[in-house]
Image (tube, rainbow, N blue to C red):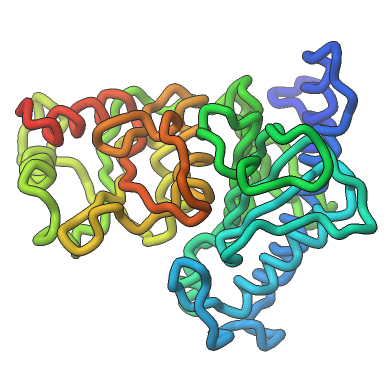
Length: 336
């Protein structure tokens, strides 16, 4: 029998990757496994949301001022409860909570830190548009005991793993531990994430730009010039680019990862720091994009170099194919 593709579950892949680290204790592998279980639990609820009265708003707003959906609340609690008892984490932080999330006193504290956006794109939930969960893992920097705020406020370059789960036409788990980017698709018939995209590499150049162009009039003139340039008709340079925008970062960034091009949520006259959160969205996505051979900046510097000052800090972001981000950067810096 001839096989063209190996059958590899996420759990098996994680354990095989563990062998690349001679001093590994298995703690990190178990942490990733727990995340995959949380993803399945969230997927289960997302996939039947309209049947179990879990659509709609809770009437609350989160720390960033966004309306909290019922699914937001469910995903937030599910991920926390799936991760709090394992003994691998010292602290967590979620986009839905203003302060850090301590590990309950009855459980052991570990050596890792988890930051997560439980349900990215929640404004699209009721319209049944692609949503997802985003996570970021660090090693703790405090000496022991319960984790502290400083454990969460680390530069993105210090991440030891990052990833996201997309709940769309299929459920896909994408992650990296610094050795490339790998994607796994959930097979609902067996309840396992199966390797579908090994060592994802983003194209060096694409033909898609993904931005909320409804904000065009509030953008800086330099960015407006960039948009005008890439939408001009010039076949010799691969223009015009096509606009594709879902309004869910995890979906737009995933498409950019797979097809190339650029995703951006810039600052504007009303919101100079942009809308997206550095710790929960931009750092993990920048890590994934860079691990796949792409580039991620805030317009002036590398996203992963930014030292967070607050849990819910916002930042402009431009990420995607190296050539496309470089071109955008030239416009933003007034070089074109």
